[in-house]
Amino acid sequence: MKQLRQRAIRDLVAQRPLRTQGELAAALGERGFRTTQATISRDVAELGLVKANREGTQAYALPPRLIDAEATGEDRLRKLLIDLPVEFHEAGLLLVVRTLPGSAHAIAASLDRARWPEVAGSIAGDDTLFVAFSDRGSLQRIKRRLLRLAGGGA
Image (cartoon, rainbow, N blue to C red; front, side, top):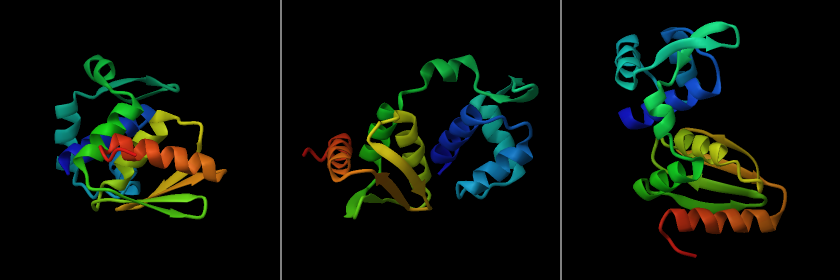
């Protein structure tokens, strides 16, 4: 859980300016993580987050060592899909991805970071992710790609 939470923190800090640990806790809460101030304080220290000027305000930022080490969205997806049990189901023009509780947001964030043009959008809950497509061919291509990344061939 710590690894998933810290991935979520890295994603959140990269996506938008968060000025305080309270704002960080609220953003984590939006993603389904319940944390205490002490846990967030430890995560901030372990990740080495720094304050930097973002959009005219001082906000948390990733330290250079993490920015350089950040994997592409597809690399992160591969790691998550190999490490987590996932099931894929089609529902119209949606691909429904089921996984462990607390893991759907990390998969969704990595999928968003990959910026695959076939993906119209995604919504993540606690253990379920809905990925929307504009046509059946796009859904099939992405489903095959995700199965390959998960080590399932196809």
